Length: 84
Image (cartoon, rainbow, N blue to C red; front, side, top):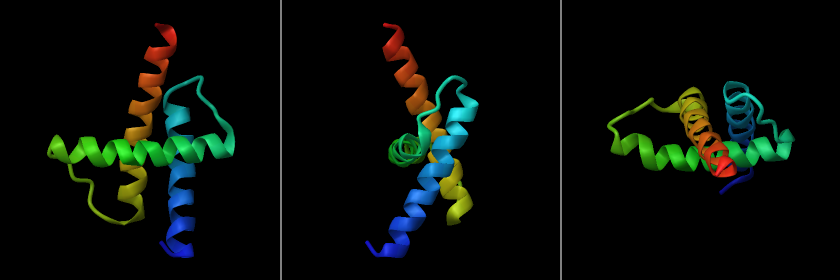
């Protein structure tokens, strides 16, 4: 992975994590936490969305949307686990 791809991954992760934190109220993890949530959310989305037949297209915008969906699912699961 080149430095450009790493920087793009970090930016997409940060934006997706921040958006997911805004959608799922009460979850703000700071910049590093948002990046981690966004990257893990992108991984979750890459496993889940194709199996459901959902394609968001390519490019940065599609990656941000997919990572945000995955991050929202991840934060929802974290909320469920913390309640139990």
